[in-house]
Image (cartoon, rainbow, N blue to C red; front, side, top):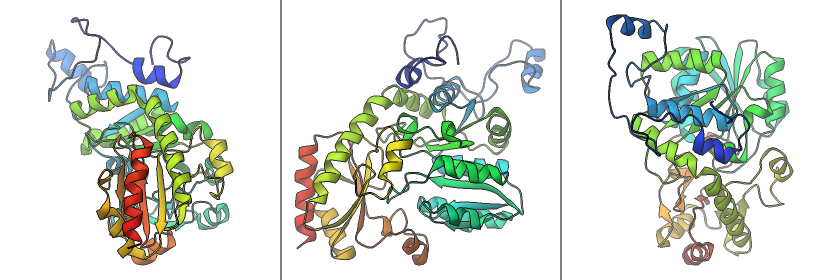
Length: 397
């Protein structure tokens, strides 16, 4: 962080933090599309490789565009440092590979992204790391699942796709009482709506692919936390193993941070309007959105978030057949599993994002055949309502 950015607001940090202009005096950041960097002497090269002086070496682990994105996101999240990765899943993998060892144990909320479930349930056990899944909103279940070898608690809040919330302060207290780390996936909220580190979490992970980009252009991830765990251990894993973010993608994400505050407020406004409208539709069985007073953690959302987010889920009567008819009848909303885009998107979680996990795990997470996830974009909300009305009529068909 440079200048006065320690006192700047989040929007200003997302626009101004960390920029170092070149001799060309550019106003917008240039793109450094280079695989490696040159040295003025053999001694300088040796000093940089030995970490005896700062400077770029190789874009797998040091590039000006990636550095700038990392500095800005760390400033917005309130972390000491950030490590950017090639995807959101590689951010979670890098965190686990860097901070866990064979014989360790994770406690994870059962309502997380399907690929997160697969990573914890199917991949990490090959390396001797086991995971117990518990209901996100049940503190007693978290407490009971902790073992002597538990090293990490992992929570996604709000959850994908049912927007369930976990009490971050309470989870942090439980983790720290057992000498464990609390890792929070902050993808749905971003630092604009929620700052887990300030609530006691140790590490925040992001799929930058979602709201940090905001326009569905690039894939990337990020890990934010302290200098020891993230700046040394996670970065050390990335430097060696190489799940790095590309310079061009980092430049795109940096541009995304510049408009993040404005976009998140608009996403929240549209999602609130659509959630309330969907509640009144006869074909809709239930709407899941923290901004609704009927949401079981509405009070918690008001307490630990500054907005309710742009993602909602709703269940239609008639199961999978009705849900698919609704999707196929839409003409405006995009059929895609991505979220956080300026364009509204819809997906059927049971057969897409959570289709590869076991049926019993889907059932435990509350993902029914009639459930649809809607990532509300920035279109005029009246146009979205008209499009969804056509889909709901088809669902009832």
